[in-house]
Amino acid sequence: MADLAVLILRICIGVVFVGHGLQAAFGFFGGPGIGGFSKMLESLGFAPALFWAYTGAYVELIGGLFIILGIFPRIAAFLILIFMIVAAAKVHLSKGFFLQNGGFEYNFVLACVCIALMLLGGGKFSFFDKL
Image 1 (tube, rainbow, N blue to C red):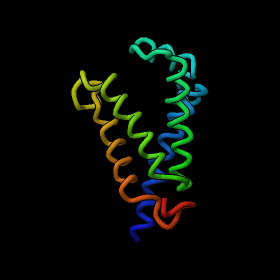
Image 2 (cartoon, helix red, strand yellow):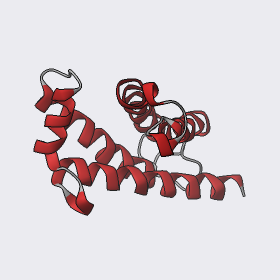
Image 3 (cartoon, rainbow, N blue to C red):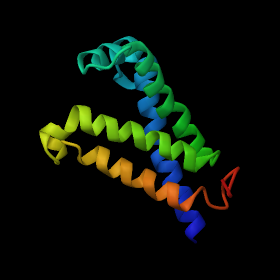
């Protein structure tokens, strides 16, 4: 039963990150695309912004796919965790905790799920259940 729970957790969080990655990289689902994402990162002081835009977009997109499939889930979760910590610190922390004020509540939940996946691994319903 625990392996089924990990699978459900992997699919749910993976879908969220794939969706965010598609928004950031390609502008799908109303997202900014790589150009808009790069401009937003530049406004936050990231340099070179285009490098960080591609890095962030593809960490979310490929990391989300890897989590869904259970391919190196601990590594994928760790990379996404770093991305969530940076996003929370640079964008949301100054706005407090709660999401309605633009706070880091959502990033906190996503980061906690990433930590759980780092501890649990992919479970037996993954391509690499021991990694």
